[in-house]
Image (cartoon, rainbow, N blue to C red):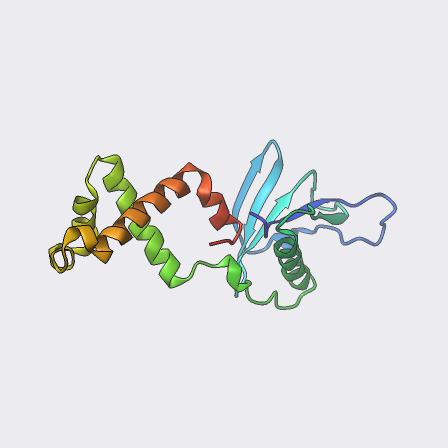
Length: 174
């Protein structure tokens, strides 16, 4: 995730760099160690922090690694939030682009249901009936119905998301 903060050991010449202390990890919701380091989710009042510790242990002087890619601003925003937290302040709210809106969340639910129907070989009409009900589907002729177009788009978007498009959601994109 682009707003995960990647922490690495600071170069030896940075003797004043902040050291990782156990209290920095208070509020830990998730901690998974793997071959690439530890992935930690820290609870915060206004939105969780995602941290990736690479070769970092308690007592290590810290530096942040920020890849210069299309997500550099999201990465910097995540780092600034974490820096405020580590400094004893309020991290601040999670930027809007990081959270799913209620409307997008509802659409994702419909996409998953539509994908289930599609994978079960259901027709678009059968999927529409399951999603919107008989009354909505019968309201207009099927071939010109907006429900039909909506259902087709849901299935296409669900297939795209299943085949790798979900990464865009993880990056905070829509």
